[in-house]
Amino acid sequence: MRRGWLLLICALLSVFVVFGQGAGERAYMKRAEFEQWQNRELKSERFRQLPYRIARFKGNGSDPILVVWIHGGHSCGEDNQSHIGDHYGAISKLAAQLQSRQIDAVLTAPHCSEQMREDVFGSTKLLCDWLKSIIATEDIDADRVYLIGASFGGMMVSKIASSSPNIPVAVEIIGTVPHIRTSGTPQFAVCCVASDADNPRKFEHTTEQMLSLQQLGCKVLFVEHSGLSHRDICERGIEPKILDWLLSHKRQR
Image (cartoon, rainbow, N blue to C red; front, side, top):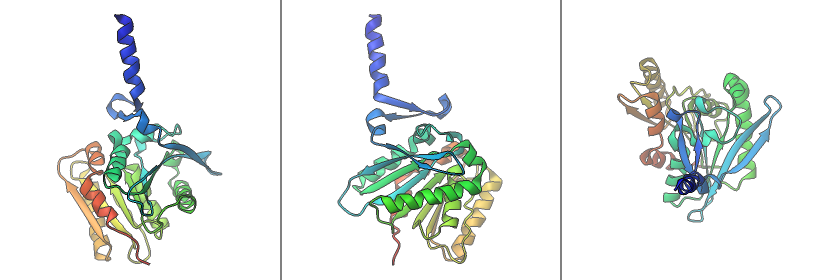
């Protein structure tokens, strides 16, 4: 009887991969789903390396779009695994939504280290260089590059878009202030997801920043929630209607 239970437990463990640092931050991904994510890294002089995961999804036969997900600060590390389960499987939700739309897409997620978290200037340069290498080496539509980040990841999306404004066509910043700094009107669309209960002062600053971007002539979508915590707002950022808005943008040349 005991052996039967052990076999059942082993079978269940073989189906799922567990990610995260603690019970409150765990997310689960089916092992078959996890195994489609290629394990890669970009060498760096400033940092040891930038590990990242990348997966390709086949759709209707169009040129693949590029979607970049950058995790929150609590998932910083170097194992190139725990960030895939960040924010209760946000990247799994992204993958599922892309597949449901039958969109050809490359979805990639860098794993930022604690050292990168402490060196925002160096991290911005490294992530910009990494993103340019992805665009140069992967078969993607360079006019359809979308950046999505939550919390720390949202800050890094702001930094990347400000530093290399010609790369993204649309960005989504979740749970943090959209510090977009470009000369003139940003040529990419900006979505921000925020909650008044996350941090009232940060929410007020976010509202001001989004209004400022709109007045500059930037295409914006401000998704406001009431009463949601920081964790909840990071989960709510991956919603079909938001992805629809992001993907509706394509750079016109």
